[in-house]
View 1 (cartoon, helix red, strand yellow):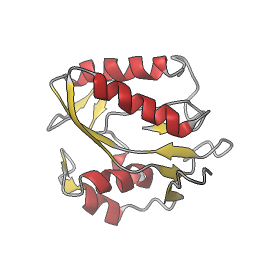
View 2: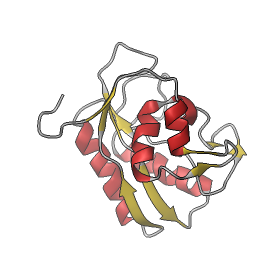
View 3: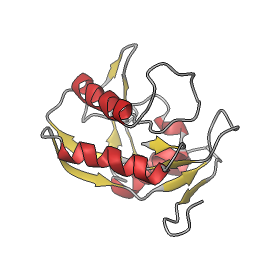
View 4: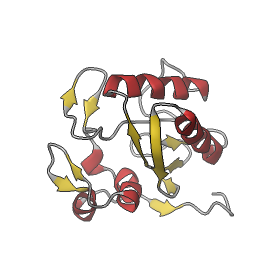
Length: 160
């Protein structure tokens, strides 16, 4: 999850809260919040990012529908240019052992191995999780990640 518009911490906290009250989701764990630089469009505010782990009976596309509803509820526009500022961005990184590639959804997320802003918080909550298809643990991916972008634990007391 990430946000770089408005009250970034609140946007993410609200998204997690909606997941938490969903009857189809259990055992939510989330990593710390991290301050991260934008990857492609550098002319925007830094993001706050985290990774959330959960258990669900929802199939991948049902989870995607729930996520799209949460994003919409928090003010994310359906039609937008890629890599632009956003109130909330929620991606499905993995879904159990699922492997799929459609126009709407690719699991595991195709850029997971290249993004420290994903791997650092993911490593915090599930370092030994083996990514399907890639066959490496989250921690192994983090150790070998070439991404040099700014990713630092976010100080909730002194907002940046």
